[in-house]
Image 1: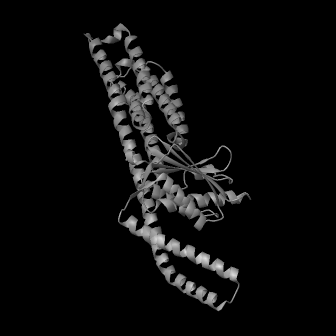
Image 2: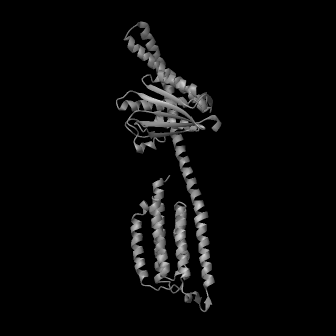
Image 3: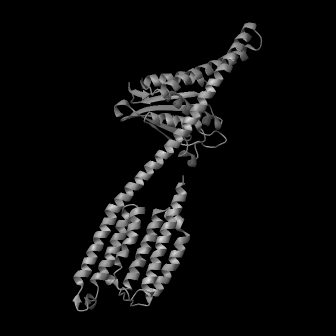
Amino acid sequence: MPSLASSRYRAADQLALLRMMGLVLKLCLTFALADTFGLSLHSPALNLALIIEGLYLGFTFYLRKQLFNSDAGLFIALLIDTLLWITWLYFSGGATNAFISLLLLPIAIAAVLLPKWAPWALALLSTLAYSAMLFTLPQGEMQHHGMDMSSHYLGMWFNFVISSLVLTTSVAFLAQRLRRQDAELAYMREAQLRQERLLALGTASAQMAHQLATPLASLRLLVDELHDESTGSQMTLDEMQTALNVCDVTLAELRLATDSIREGEFNYISINKLIETLQQQVRLLLPSIELVISTIDCGDEQLRADASLLPALLALIENGARASEEVGGPARVELSLQCQFDELVVAVRDFGPGIPSPLLTQLGHKIIDKPKGMGVALLLSHASFERLGGRLIFGSHLDGGAIAQVYLPLPEAQ
């Protein structure tokens, strides 16, 4: 599948080629076909304008990729193109030039590639220039073989105005709709790729969990035998027993979560119950973490959840605790829950070094190859929140550290 950057570069090349063809057309009409189409070339300044345009197009061809990636840069280039077309038309017959409709070319390009204001601005400039050339046309040039051509030229002007309006309304609307559809398709492709990665991770996790069950059972038997024989350090045995209990609980929860997610089971849990369960899980699985919880305006609200919600929140808390420890402080995490309109906002704040700006838009969306981790837990958490109709946003806290905000819809909003 071609990358977005390569697609943009091809489009920039095509646009540069189209603008070059416009210059070639001017040269042909000026030096080879002027008599054929009745063009009145009444100024030597036209040659200078064509030389300037050639240099200008060569310069913009060199910078075509940068121009195409910037709306302002592309608009300025099309604005200068329009002024050059106006100059050529003025020196080759003005409003009587049969090729006056070529002024629509920059408008059409702007309607397809730029925001709505751009084609309107170019259409206004072109219409004013055409009107000035028409209404300042000497009366003698309105005659052709003794016929009054004023009505014909006025009809050409009116047709130009209608055409420019069509480009700035209908074409611009269709182009905007196509851009929106392209953005939606790109998001869907990204989501599909993310789900495929998550499926691979889930399959591998299930296989490894199945493989861990047997050695964990063997270790438990060995620890029980050591307890019975009273050999070894009692403290070491107690720590091993605690670790095995955590592994057993985690594996049991993994099996239950896998079954419920596969069957698409959802349940409703009160926010108070969610907080209580979170506190219990942190004390059991992450006893070294200092968790501070606060709630605002939630009352007895119910939340639609599945078996993946709690592990996803625990992953955010664990990541926050590790970040707090990176700066030499305690493993402290602040968790706040607030009901805003039709959403529950869960904010997990750490006291670590913060998240670098380039990573803010990547965490939770892709696997990141970094020495401190690849963001797999955050990727899984984001997928869990999306499945529940929520979203995960990372940012920096004003007082230092990072903050992860989870937005989950409340039942009446679904």
